[in-house]
Structure formats: C-alpha cells, structure tokens
Length: 158
Image (cartoon, rainbow, N blue to C red):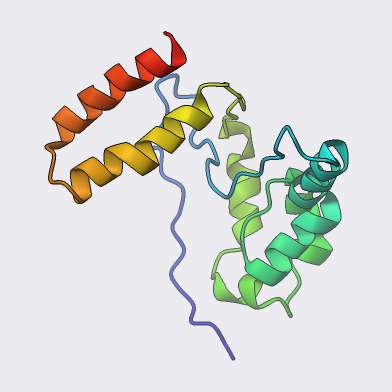
C-alpha cells in the first residue's frame, strides 16, 4: 500500500518560538515509563526501560515500525535508516523528515525529568475524587479544584 504524499512545510522564522528565541521546539511527546519503587526487579526494569526508550536499535525500530521520530538523535544521521527508499514512512513525506529534523536540531530544547513524592497522591485524588465530583456529581469545576487543593494540602501536609 502506498501512503498518500502530503505537501512539505518549509521552516519559517515566523513560526512560534520559545521566549529566548534559541529553541524552536522541545520535542515533548511520547509515553512515559516508570518503575515502581517496590518492584522486585527495579534495577532490571529500569535498565530495560532505558534500552527500550534510548538505545539505537530500539529507536531505529520506533521509526521503521511505528513511524515516530526517534528521540535518539543519532538515528537522524543514519542515512541507511533515514533515506531507505523501501521504508513506507520515508515514502510518505515529500521532504525527508530527517533532513528537516537535522536542520532544526540546534534549536531543540530539552526538558529535565523530575520526580516528586507528592505526584502519586495528587494524581490519585484528581482521578478518583475531583473528576468524579465534576463529571458525576455536577460540582462546578472551580469548586471541585478548590476542594481538591484543600484536601491535598491536608493529606500531604503542605
């Protein structure tokens, strides 16, 4: 099956940029992975996650199988992968995706990952209490958020 071609979009200096004008994107996308602290094999799981998300072979597969732009930027420079005429995703774009990514590579910002021990209880409260209050009980959004803020401050102690 041939994928339809779509017109390429040339880079424009008029496109939105970050306030410092140095970065044009943050490549913020994809799925997050986590290893529960109580995992029996936490170190092995973390090593696997790193391999699955960051290694060269895994990132080549991300492009060749899924058609997602790989986070491992060394793939972007591998001509065997990025200019493979048999790859359906390379065929899809009229302008080679990796040529464009390499052109803007210097303007890509990076986010720092973080962990916070308060995130699990906040997420749990939001999903199990706040959203139910809003969608099931008809509580006004601001009222439900204010109540969640108060309840979480009491629970977390901050």
